[in-house]
Image (cartoon, rainbow, N blue to C red):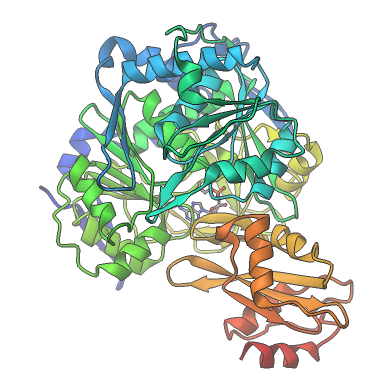
Length: 640
Ligand code: PRX
C-alpha cells in the first residue's frame, strides 16, 4: 500500500499529505469544501441534515438569540429511527456492532442492523411498560456491552432523555447525577470484567440510587451473578421477553433534549451538558462520515468509554447513523497482555482506529516496535488531550506504518462532535497540530482584549456563530453557569472553549492546553475545584489545593496539598480513599502533601501556579501578589 506524501517544512518540521489511495476512498477529496461551507455554513449544515430522515422538515435552519441558538427549528426527528430504520433497507443483515468481551475465552457477539433494531424496539416497549414517558430522565450506569447501546437507543426512541454515568464513577458520583436530573429509572448491570477482575457494578448502583427519585432499576446480566432483586428491580432479559418487536419512534422536536452528559468545569460541581435531538444528530452523522470516512467495508473501533462524549458520538450514534460496523470492547486495552489492542485490530480487521494519547503512550511504552503488520488499518485518530510529537510520530510510524492519515481530533463534551481536525482525503497531517476547523465550523484565536492573534501567537480558542448544530444548548438547570462559562469572556455571541491554541502560517491549529482549572488525567476530564471540594468535606481538613502536573503516560496526574486543622491528623491513604469514594479510581492522586499553609494572593485566592511550578521545578514567575511568601520554603521541603 502507498505511503503518505511527506513534506519537509523548514529544518525540523514535517508533515504528510494523503496518498492517491486515501483520496480515492475519501468522501472529501479537495479543500474546496472549506471555502464552500465557509461561504454559507447554515446551508452547509442544512444539506447534511437533508441526508437524514425527518418526520417533519424544519422551517428555520438557524435561530440566534445570544447566547442561545437553535437549529432546524420546527423540524421533527428521531435519532434511533435514523440509526436503525434508515439502514434496514440496504443493510438489514450487515453487522452493526461487534462486541468483544474482555475474557479471551468468551465469545464475540455480533449484532446485525436488524437484530439491533429488534432489541432496541423490544426494550423501548419494556421501558414504556415501566412507566417511562417522553422527557423522563433515564440513568444509564453501564459497562461497555451491547445492552448499553440498546438502552441509549431505546430511550431516545421513546423520547426519554438519557444520562449516561461512567461505570468507573463511584456511587456518590452516580447519586449526584441521578439527583440533579431527577432520573426515574436506572439501567445497570450485575457487573463487568476489568483487567481480569469482576467489578461488582450492581453493588455500586445500589448505593448510588439511595436517596434519589429512581423508581425502577433494570439490571443486565453480564457476569451471571446470582442476585436477589428487590421489588422495584427487574432483569433486562426478563423485561424484554414477550415484548412486541416494534415500538413507534417518537417524533421529537429538533430542540428537545436528547441527552444530558455531566462534565467537569472549573468549579466544584459537575455540569449537566444538554444536547438536543436535531442538531446533535446532524453533527454526529456528518463528522463521522467525513472524518472517519466510513464505507461499507470499514470496521470502526473507537476505544472511548460510553460514559464520555466520545463514547456517545463515536462509539454509538455516529457509526450507526452512517450504517457502519463498529467494535465495542468491554475491557482494558492491555489485558491479558500488553498487545491486546493489536490482537483486536487483527482479529476484527479494524480499518479505522480512534484512541487517546494516553493509550498511545502506554502502547509505545510496552512495544517500541510494532511487529504486527496491522494492514487492515486505513485511518488512525487521536482525541482528548494534546498529543506530543514523540507519541504522534510513534503512532503514525509504528501503527499506521506511514500509510494511514493520523487525525488529531479536537473537541469537547460541550461541542457534541469534532470541531478541528484534518480530513483524511485532504490533509495535511502535521505532528501535534489538530488541523483546520471542520467545514462549516468557524473558530478564532483571540487575545485577552478580544483581538485576533497573529500566526504563532497563543491565545484563547473561541467558536463563532453560526455555531455547529451539535453544540450544547445549555447546562441543565443552570442558565447562569452556561452564560458565565461560555459566553461571558468575549461577550454573548462568542463561545469560549477555555482552551489555549495558536495557528501556524497555513492556518493549522495547535491546541496547547486549558486556561482554566480543568485537568486531564489519562484523557479523563476532572476539575481541580471539584476534587478540592470533596477533600475539604472531611472535617479534619482545613483547606486543600489540587493541581495537575505533567506525566509521561497519563498526560497529567493529580497532586493534592492538604492543610489540616490544628491537632487533626489524616493519612495520605485516607485522602486517596476520600477521592476514590467521591469520584472513582480515576481521581486517585499520585502525590499527597501535607503543608501548614497554601500560597495565596492578598484577596485569598490560592495560587496553584506556584504549587505546580514548585513540583515541576519551573521558575515561580511573578510572586509579587503572594501574601505569604514564606510558605514557599516549607512547601519546597515537603515535596523534596
Ligand atoms: O482541553 C481540550 C481537550 O479536552 C477538553 C475536552 O474534554 P472532554 O469534554 O472530556 O472531551 C474530550 C473528548 C472530546 C478540551 O477542552 N482536548 C480534546 N481533544 C483534544 C484536546 N486537547 C488537545 N488536542 C485534542 N485533540
